[in-house]
Image 1: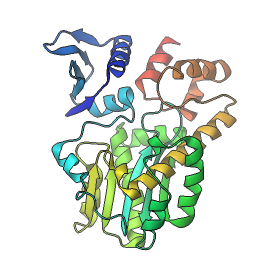
Image 2: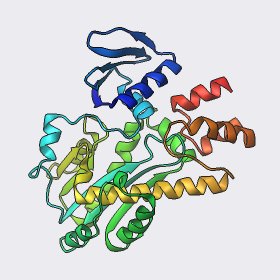
Image 3: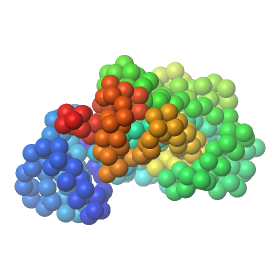
Image 4: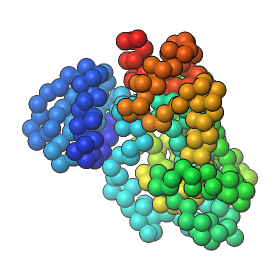
Length: 300
């Protein structure tokens, strides 16, 4: 498997540091800043900023080191995002996820259905990709969307997530596929809408395959940056809202500030957690298969 990303210079330096800390084997490569080899993956960062990730472990590596960063869209995906690529917002369903790249907190998938007479209402709310909206606005938009539109949410708090991840063959994309499918199938059965848009998280478009297996007549568009479609934007807001709620619940339950993301605030939080609680309880708050968690536990 090969995935391609585009990194800015700061992201490139941060990635290099992270891979050095994880004891990757670095090699020289013509026209590249570096090439690093780890278990099941070869990572090459070129001077242009293009990052090429190859190997059977590419998808898991993406989750661990790049979090929610999207792969560079293929020509097909770019075409789908053009003005004629997405189906109309009215009578459509969209799905998105939150928490995939966060060490702490839940994994959430949400889907929203937009009825014929509700598209204009949603457009007027200026709903957009949740990554472009501050948390305060998310907490306002979320309840409003739930009040006015049909929706489905699947939220796996860490304890359940860690169990389900193992059941899914230790593959987060297999788990995500099931969660997206569950939400979309439920809404499609309820609404009868045939237009479905999915924010793509794997190059193989696994959600489309699952949906077409039960109904070949569905029009499923599965592309990166699908939040440009109104239904997916609304779903991204609901997923983010539930993720924020999950982080708050964990912070309250475990008497500490649970950080988001997988960057520099995470190691101090892991240390604080182990000072107050046992290592065995870490699975209640964190995605314990993440390499940063495994590395931390090995050293502590």
